[in-house]
Amino acid sequence: MRLVLACAFLLAGGSAAFAGMSLGFRWGPTGQCFDPNSPPITLADVPDGTVKLRFRMTDLDATGFNHGGGEVAFKGQETLGYGAFHYKGPCPPDPSRPHHYELSMQALDAGGKVLASARAERRFP
Image 1: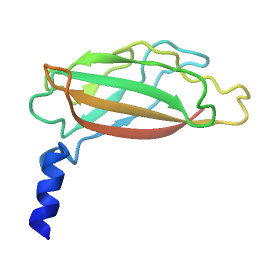
Image 2: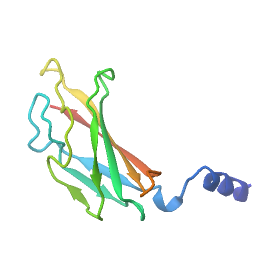
Image 3: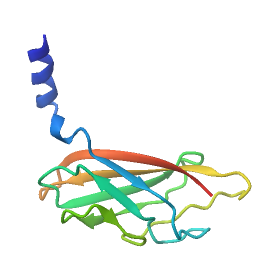
């Protein structure tokens, strides 16, 4: 049974070596509202063969608003500084009621194939 599950996992494109990719972020100098500079980001366990990272920001309290995202060339870095890509930053309509934002990341190879993905969530402000 374990062999069948392992084969199914590999056929689906999974890899245990890539299962642990993660990212984190903090708002740092991010200003309100719609600061176009991405927040400072930390990366861990990005799979070998990754040449590009694709990011997308989602407001979990207003999913209909498109914050966009961006792409960054990956050269083994473990951090991305404030403004590594441009998007529409956080802007909860009522500053007294924070929103929750999710940053998602995909690791892409030279052909554009997704090797792994990760997500992180933070409240703003």
